[in-house]
Image 1 (cartoon, rainbow, N blue to C red):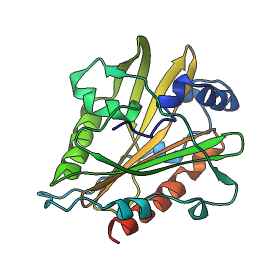
Image 2: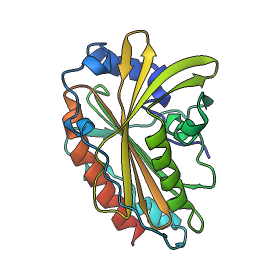
Image 3: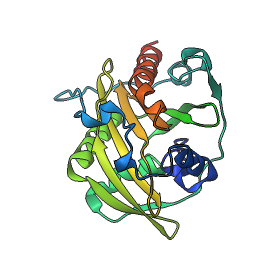
Image 4: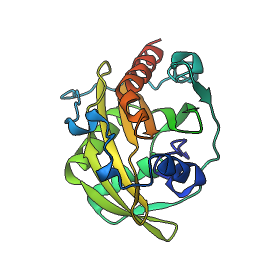
Length: 240
């Protein structure tokens, strides 16, 4: 399954992402005075000692779990982007579970609905995907990602022969689902040019939602509210 999380890190090699960097002033993300306050907080993750196996989400549930334009504040528009065919390889074994955040496949997952949105001239972008697993696969996936986040603060990704430096930091995850975690991936897309997409992963039963928000300095403040809206919609759809 080719993920639709194509913006952010996956789109770091595209004109769209480079245009966003230009809107941010083309500066290194570490020097950006408009950092999202959530990035300075620890991640919040709810866990279960032994998650029970759950039935895979149906196609209808996954469709109901994804954001629609009407769920977002005024000014957003629906967008559509080409699938990325890039192949990502990481240089550290402990970081391997994070590779799908760069646009790779999620082993064992069945693809559901997805959506992409943008504001203005792609000043802020959202990319969302819902997948489902068999048995306890969703809980195992979140657990594996949590372990990787603890063990992998930085790595280098080989993208079809080109190398990209990636720094990973936990941020505060939205509440309301059985499990949730969130991270910021600071990616050097060119010398001195860094982008910092925020990514949320939420589990409800056998389903997992991945939500990516890539924004300029002004748009970073909207991350917490947008992630909460996406989480609530996902949980409601997964339980329908």
